[in-house]
Amino acid sequence: MNFSFALFRTALLSRRRGWFLLLLLPLITFGARALLPPEEVSTPVQVGVVLPESGGESFWERLEERSGLVVTFRLSSLSRAEGQVASGRWDCALVLPEDFDARLARLDVDGLFTLLTGPGSAVYPMVRETVSACVAELVSPSMAEEYLLDSGIAAPEGLEDVRPRLHEVLLDQDRVLVSMETADGRPLDPLTLADSGVSALLSGLTAILLLIWALLTAMDLGRWLDAPFARRLLPLRGGLALLLPRLGAALVPALCAGALALLAVERPVHCILSLIPYLLFWGAAALAMARLRPVWSALPAVVPFVPVLGIVLSPMLLDLSAIFPALEPIIRWNPVTLYLRACGGSWADGLLLAAAGLVILAVLLAADRKRT
Image (cartoon, rainbow, N blue to C red):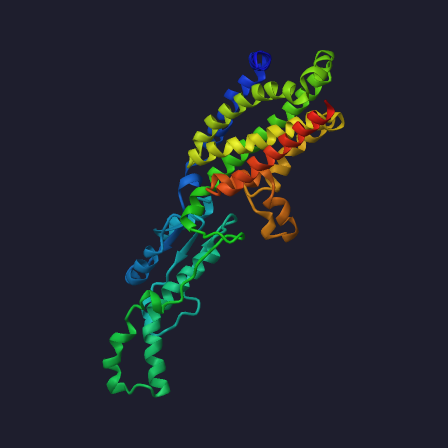
C-alpha cells in the first residue's frame, strides 16, 4: 500500500500536463458558451408579422397564442420586416393583405399571405403550417355554415340556432392530439429540445476531450511499462498493481477538470456524476491498451481522428442513425452516446459504462494472476 501511494503521489506531482488540463478544459467549455451568440443560445426563432392598417386582430391573437420558446411572432412594419429578414435577424416575415378580413368573410384564402424569406430562412415551412391552422380556425365556422346549407342539413331560418355550436371549442377528449417522441422512443418536449442543444454540445465536447486524455494516458502507461524500471518490477508487483496508481494520477486531474467544465451546462449535477462511470470505462480501457504494445504504439495515428468520429458517431450535434439506420447500433452503444444519455437522466447507460469498465478490470486482474 505504501508503495502504491508513493507511486501515485510521484506520478501526480510529476504530471504538470494534467494540471494544465485542469485549467484548459473549463476554459474551453466556458469560452465556447461565451462565444456563442446570446440570441442563438436563448432566443427563439423570430418571425415578423405585418398586419393591414385595419383588421387582422383575430388572426394575430391566435398567432400570438402559438408563440413560444421555439418560434416567436413579432408585429412589424413592412419596411422593418424586409430589413430584418434580409439581415438574417428574423427567419422570415408574414405580410397580410389590406383586405384581409373581407377576404376571410368571403372564404377567399387562395394566395392570402405573402411570405418574405431570406437566404438563411429555415423554419418557414413550420410557419406556413401554423398560419394555416390559424386561418382554418377563423374560417371553419363560415365553411360549416355553407356546408349545412348546401347539404340540406340545416335550413336558412334555423341557422341562427345552430350557429353558437359552430363556435364551440372542443374538449381535449374530443380532439386529435399529437404527441412527439425522439427516434429512440423517448417523449419529446419542444421547449426542452430548444434549451438542450448547447448543453449537449458542451457535454459532448467535454466527453471527447476526456477520451483523448485517456488515449494519451494509455500511451504514457505503455511507454512507462516498457521502461527497464517497470520491467524489473513487473514480476514482483504485477502489471495492474504498477499501472493503477499512475492511472489514478492521470484521472484525478481529468475528473476535476471535467467537473469544472460541466458547470457551464444546464444540469451540471447529472453530467458531473456521469463522469465517474465514463472515466471508469476509459480508464480500464487505457489499462488494457497499455498492456498491448501494438495498440498503444498505434494510438498517435488514431488520436487526430477521435474528435471527428466522436462528433459524427454520437448525437451531440445530429443523430445520424435517423438518416442512416445502419449506424444505429454503432451510435447507440458508443461510450460518448452512453455518457450523453446518462447526462440526460438515463442512469442505466451510466451503469452500463461502469459495468463494462469493471469487466475489463476483472479480465486484467485474472490475466495477472494467471501469469503469476
